[in-house]
Amino acid sequence: MRTAQKTLIGWLLGLLILTATATAGATMYSDSAALKGVDNGQGVFLFDFDNPQKLAFYLNVVAGTHENFRRQAVEPNFVVVFIGPTVKYLTTEPDDEIDMRYQQEMANIAAAIERLDELGVRLEICSIANEVFGVDNKTVLPGLEVIGDGFVSLIGYQQQGYHLVPIF
Image (tube, rainbow, N blue to C red; front, side, top):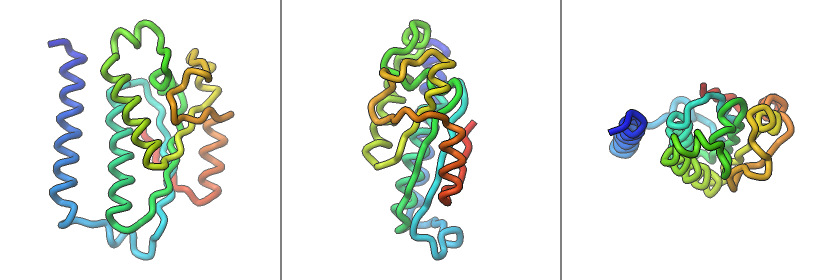
């Protein structure tokens, strides 16, 4: 078995365990102290790394966090901003090396993006990062909105009361 397959299986097993644990403990544990008086959870998640397995994993974590807010009667209002080399894995036309090496991860990423879009999470991809890393803005995955500058977006959302959740 290839190392990449072992890594993917490890990530998926970890996610399954995380999900099973969260589901099993959903009625036992809550975030009531942190959510006291909160009816809207505004978060802006910053993704900036060069690892497709990690990207797929954390996209699913964001979806789980979204579900945990709803489970606790708090309306999630999330934005995900992708900058840096992360953008290389958010295209329908990845370069040949990524396409050959990370086919399964790319499928997992696309599925996670679709799920987040269905949940109503706003998904933004930085046009500057796309230019730097050779991603054609016309080829970004469905559900992603190309924006001018990821840093401007992050600052703007924080000024609107969103809380930064950096994922590196």
